[in-house]
Length: 121
Image (cartoon, rainbow, N blue to C red):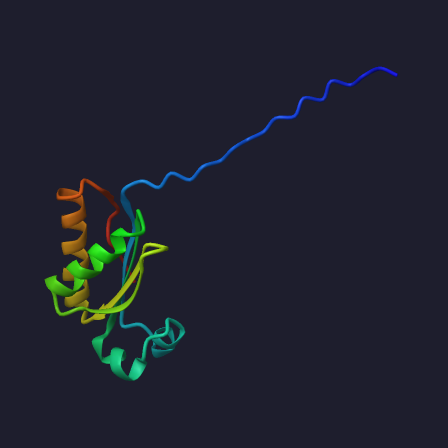
């Protein structure tokens, strides 16, 4: 029998997160059901009228941007995850927009991150 030369190729994939904000989105006037699905209390949060959603890598930076969000405006933390790099903030549209702008400015100018533009719905 002829011997078949089956060379196997092994591929190693490695995730190397950049230093970047990949999503900065503001939802104005969301439906109350969205607050519930996000684990936020619509009775408390709905009057705020806006939700900001951001993702950042490395994920630990979520702690820093959460602090900036709270200190830079009247926005409140809805959720922060240092393992996935997710941040949800709530507040008036102007509070959330102010917080997101402050976050993007800080991480770009001080930390040297690449930032995306702000999107809105």
